[in-house]
Image (cartoon, rainbow, N blue to C red; front, side, top):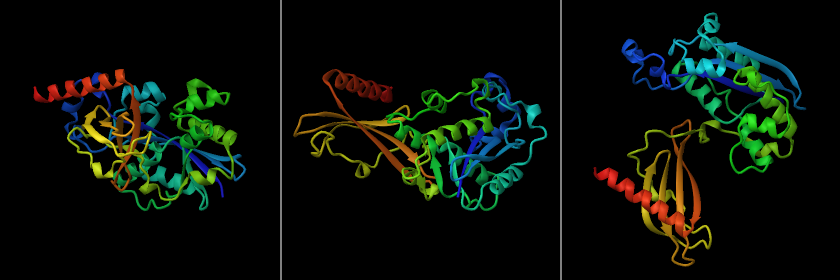
Length: 304
């Protein structure tokens, strides 16, 4: 058994009209396309059971959906259209990755996004069987917990903290990022602890934040309404409203008198099931007034 660490680079249309104002006039079929990121590069490193590198893979994929490379993507990754002219098809690229991953190898990446996009791209391109994408380790999650951080670490922050030497100009190259991730993994690897971070069913794991939630309603039956301080049932002061990227509700504890802010980020599994990530904060008087003002301002905007 070994580990295969992958990294992907994507092309997408985010902010494309900044560079090509008539892009959607020239490409009307892409205006409402239900597809966000097209894979243009796959990088992978294979590690043995002792976390020593034994092989690597680097594949450019010729885009067929977003054929024009977003200049912002080139700025970040240094990948140009000329570099992709001789790229392989998505199917051939996936075949190479599938053959690279041994039968007993565990797939790994820095955060779950790459694995989610790998599966979504496979579905979009009607690629064949992808059941070989099953057991999985999120090295970002593992590193964040082992290093005792409350917020998720970026790869650059992780290598800096571990004093791993990297060439900044090479970051955002799929193979080089895989190599850097492998170095972090090797430095922090513990064969006993890592077992607790293996996802057995990636399709049931919340892997991406749900979008277009402005008119979404929170199912309060699925929300934990216990006070984080005394565990008493909370009373609703302000029902959940959508603010930017998460839902916020304000609650009051009749027992300990705490004012509690509840935040919910809705994530989705690859099967489409919604998962609530909940965060509780006990507010002081100033914070309470600030959030009350946000709710009042939001309500006024709705009436305009």
